[in-house]
Length: 176
Image 1 (cartoon, rainbow, N blue to C red):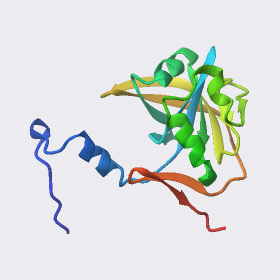
Image 2 (cartoon, one colour; image 1 turned 120 degrees about the vertical axis):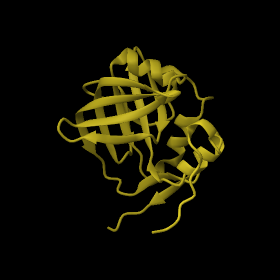
Image 3 (tube, rainbow, N blue to C red; image 1 turned 90 degrees about the vertical axis):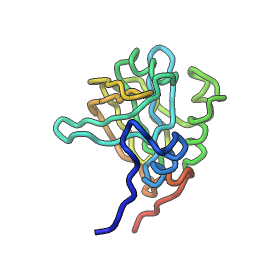
Image 4 (cartoon, rainbow, N blue to C red; image 1 turned 30 degrees about the horizontal axis):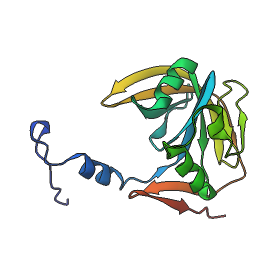
């Protein structure tokens, strides 16, 4: 068994937000663009996304409560997810940029189609797409955890993943 340095208990945290972010950056994650259409569509790059359950098919995404996306998901009662492939780093950076236009104009720079069930924009060239009905929202610190039931999904031709690791984008190439 190896020795692990332990931080003091919650009352005396020995680290700050930067150190926490840096440590969490050692966990490689996939990259998604989460979208919602509540009158006016909105998109946001998110790597805090994962599956929750197979039966029923549930996923979660964490969204900052101050983010524009937070209110869009609540208002729409649904959201779309585009899982980005290795060639889509530019798309990930675009939807992470707070200076991009809002509303429908933010989608002028990308290929997309409205989801058949949610009208949420689904991005072209992605590895996979999901349309989700919002089932629950849980406050968690400065974010909300949105639980969505997957109502429809499909996969694209891209097979190489775009990852986020140590504060930067990486590519995971498939064996094929």
